[in-house]
Image 1 (cartoon, rainbow, N blue to C red):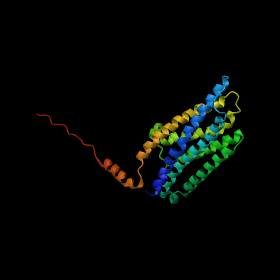
Image 2 (cartoon, rainbow, N blue to C red; image 1 turned 45 degrees about the vertical axis):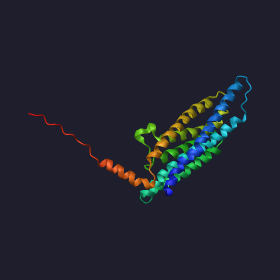
Image 3 (cartoon, rainbow, N blue to C red; image 1 turned 45 degrees about the horizontal axis):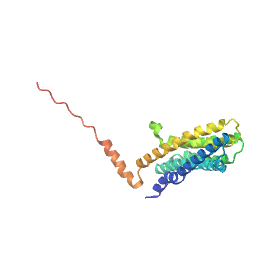
Image 4 (cartoon, rainbow, N blue to C red; image 1 turned 90 degrees about the vertical axis):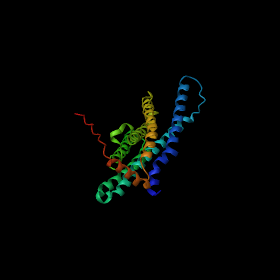
Amino acid sequence: MIAKDYFLLLHPMIAVFFVFPLIGIVVNFAWSTRQRRLQTASGNKSKIPPVVGQEHVHLGRWLTGAVVGITLLGLAFSIFAKMLEKQVISQEPLRFVFVVFMCIATVASLYFLYQAKTPIWRGIFATLTGMGLILLGCQPEVYRRGNEWFISHYYYGITAAMLMIFSLAIVQDIYKDRQNRWRTVHIILNCVALLLFIGQGMTGTRDLLEIPLSWQEQYVNKLYELQCDIKPCIIQGTPQPK
């Protein structure tokens, strides 16, 4: 394998050994936190330690950064690899500079989102982070599977990343809301995100089977060309006897 193949496998590798285990841990802490809250509200003494809620928030913040980071990594590799292959840098230098700027701006916006304290700044940096991912995803080098968006690895990933960004932006408001409206929104959206992560595992595995390594590309492309050259067989009708 060449360097391109290792970079190609970097995105799924990080997902397998870091992101998906972290999802499981966060979900476990979320369930324990809710069980403790329900037990305490009913007047019973819970055996679940109080620290479980803090751990859930702490690891949830890590999860948001991991999901946004791995999404950005997948987009950046797809864009820059094809830009170098098709020499887009010399043909469209302004777009290349724009893509580089958007990558840096998205990372910076996510960093400032972690640091923001007031709701207005959290909203601003969450919006900028989400816009950065969307603008990068709109580049022509990104394979989106638009005709099958309902089973698209790209659309599942972008939606899950948006939900994670929103969850990070409202986490401080959850503890200030006496009526638990933000908590309810947080639970619903993250249940949707969990389903999307399951879909990510399925569509990501499918895409790995479809994307050939560098030494396989020539054979796969040749196979596609042969299939395209094959003309359908036309069966002539049998002449009827006079």
